[in-house]
Length: 231
Image (cartoon, rainbow, N blue to C red; front, side, top):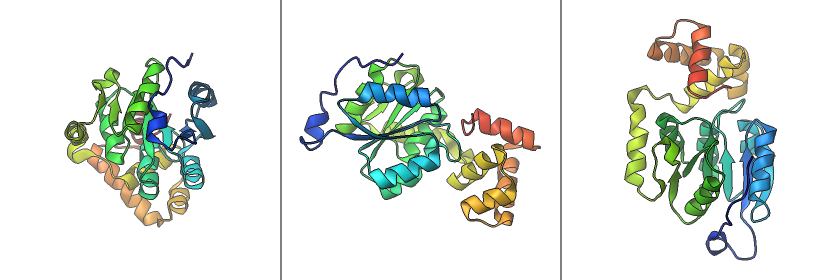
């Protein structure tokens, strides 16, 4: 059960004193977003809750929140790629990734995309409050459950985490293609959604499978599951 254990003591000093921080919550499980809404209100203004990455982009563009709390594994567009896209348009927004994944690779991906917080879902609820306080004060936060030290402003350490993906990191476009194919969409459907030619989608699929030694569509789906792109 999510409970609010401590107030956001530093929010008022970071933002204008005449308003609460505006928050968008993104998770494909409604029970999670409702629990987070109850946790954050009334000290934050939860302006929207959404259930997939595309809806997150639309909500963020329309509502221009101060804080975005996003899951990694969401339909249509995963939280990491959504973060990368929306921060190009809303560079002042703070993104905190809230996820069940405890692998450092996800931390590296999240911070490489521009997130400034990484909180594990089954951590104590107070950790999300701490993360919000830290990022609004200009720092970064990594859950101790994935080997982080909580609050930090050491960007060099975050850069080192990003380097753990090395040469085999998928591009943003490759992850999008992989996710949509793994969700069961055809090559033509993926091409239409991403505004690409079917030949380009086929090429991305070929490159993914060759890079990671995948031999079949079933292995492609297993790979997407392993890397948190589909549930």
